[in-house]
Image 1 (tube, rainbow, N blue to C red):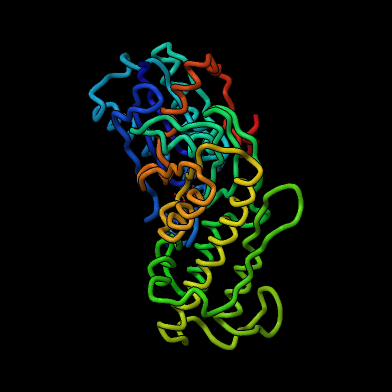
Image 2: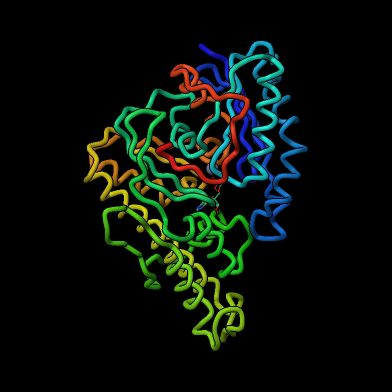
Length: 349
Ligand code: KG4
Ligand code: ZN
């Protein structure tokens, strides 16, 4: 089996990994940057790319060491080259090109989102296709249909905020920290999901799209009351701190329920349309326990096999990049040294 080094730097995680073929993870190192972005309650692109410059060489060294191999042992270098923050992607892509050139091995340009839905197959059996994939992270929310690991059609996406971003903004509204998902989930555990009626957007049309911006605004008003004035000049009668713990927990639980229900409804439609054998999840939001429970119920209802990665492969990591890279190498889909980092790239490309 081919030995692949994977590099990931699309957002705020600097990661490197070594896999043997598409499935076996020999090493996976992830350096998160949460502490650098925490003061800004969101990822600051310039800070992210500067941190990648310092950390990518470090994680590559650590991954090779953990895998017990040298650069010369590698058969190819895979890198997440799209989509993502352009300044961040450029660091990983430049590093991967340099390494591939220096050892004269093929370079593999991996689509970050396809890599996320490959993640459940890491250290595990192959995914059975056709598959429906849910991608739910801080930057992306999409529903994919796949016939093999290298090809996907997008059945739907969010038309505004990504679901993870909605969790992060809900956390700000509720006076919690960043990243918001885990904080909202923790607070929601004390609350009643039916306490506050918040909108679950189901959009008509051929695409299975969802929307989270109306939900975000509804939560803001439910928490802080109806504003006077508009936009930046709006003033609210109260803040989250004026509410009791129970009231805030009820709001968190109601928000979590509405956000997850929107995804489940769209996926339910996807399962009706596509005669799939597997339902696959990827992205940081898949850490959410309620989402995982609701996906289990959905998979049971449609008689499909649910494949969810463990937490360390849900978040951005390079093992998913190396693993999918192995499939690309086997299919002869190598890239030249002119491989471009792209902020946007359709999953169908
Ligand atoms: O995939 P990821 O680690 O990074 C990218 O966005 O690429 O996803 C991070 C997102 C954040 O928005 C975070 O709030 C959300 O995943 N998240 C969660 C949970 N844990 C992380 N959302 C809901 N519930 C969680 N337990
Ligand atoms: Zn990601």
